[in-house]
Image (tube, rainbow, N blue to C red; front, side, top):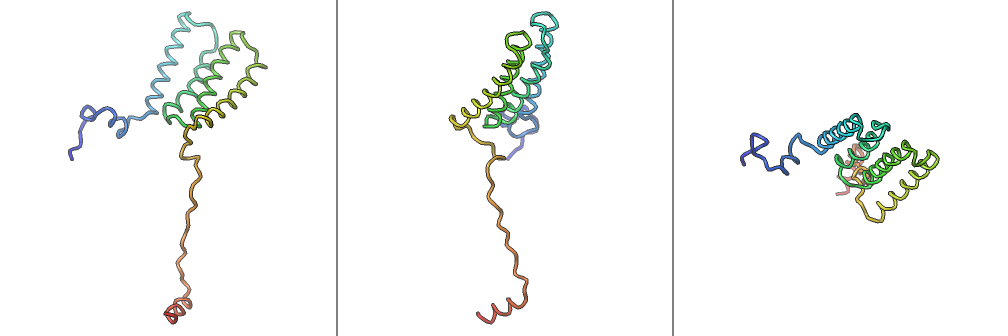
Length: 153
């Protein structure tokens, strides 16, 4: 079998799966572009005066695990929660909701996302699945039992 020497020789899907390219790096690049774009729009006056760094940090905490780890129960719940937190942060900073409304609403959303993940039967990540216990065999090193077993045979 001939191994391609450059990334251009490898089909795109195979290159993504078998090289240094990973979803994590893709997610990081996409997140940096998003942060820069929103920052630029805010600097040009196209967006309201709020703490965009905080909003984008919350949004990124939701986006990066989804893009890097794929969709599973943990990324669905945590990603959805951080997306909701970024939206609620914008609403609070623009005066649409108060902090005493934002926090309980986010707790309700976390519970709702947990129930949705269960109802939709979203897969559980492998690291959360119970592992089969390892059975260790201890060799019999007792010399009298070897002699007894030879005498029985």
